[in-house]
Image 1 (cartoon, rainbow, N blue to C red):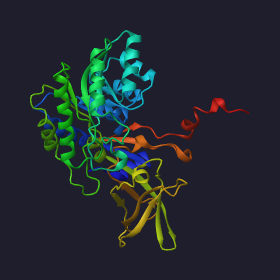
Image 2: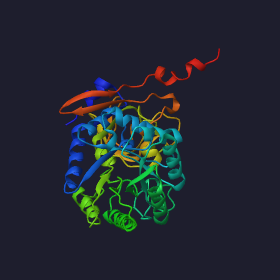
Image 3: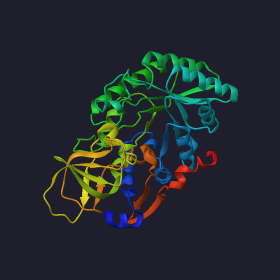
Image 4: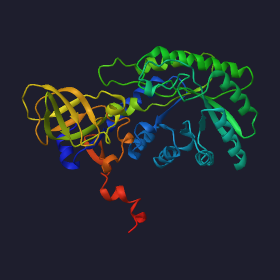
Length: 403
């Protein structure tokens, strides 16, 4: 059990806490599910890009799914070898493409015909051959939040099947492109198995179609998106997830790549915040805390639910409150109409399921310094990112300040 009071005393609040033992357990569950097939788990760095977190997965044998050259650099720093690194994302700049080619990563995941031609041109200028995969949009409704749906034609990601086939032919005929993989990712926080199976089936059929024209791929990248429990969701078992995908690959000799992020980190993470005071406005009761939307944006951005646990001596009956922070926005809340007992100054609130898309989506809005990050492993805690200071926030501006 994590002793949140001790951690608050040692590292102060607001604070991110990550259970590395839980991350290990989740990684091993998914790795075990795919053990009957050639496979690679490529950790989705965007879910939690702390270098110590990425290194933890690297030490377990993970690759890295990256969506910026910054994430690619993080993967290298954390010890992930080039042949396990994938570079995805809709808007790669020429400089990013060039660096990825020179770093000789596993492949660049291409999202459009225009991008494919830029990659080919840059590879030609470098006199290199660039391994590529093409992200296919199978037009399957993932049954998730519209902001994290990515596999429909009205999403910005990927290309339709006909465009993909045309792109593979172009790449196969290019002296500077090597089409080695195919990729799809229909969305995040997926809790329904059938859309995943349908998408895999559509993409597997495209692989078979390509094989008939002598385009032989090596990697079948199923993306990530496996959902977790925030609020009593019925989630997909890793074994069932793997079997649904593998069942579509009959007669195909492919290495399956899976890009888990949230599944590995979400429920390993906690955001710890301190109660400043309670406030009453007419019939509305607020609990004001020292954490804010700049620390954890998901409730304000998605109206996302996070379980909130009070660490208090209070024995009062619970009542409905809004839990809000100091940022000067009405959207600065962690929960509305949430049931909690009466709270006092310095009581603690633990916000659960904060390990994915928490710290990484943070900002310095209102000139607020971002919190520290702490790892807990085998009963011991350690600092893995220092709390920012005001001096950190202004460091890139001071030299330009005119007198």
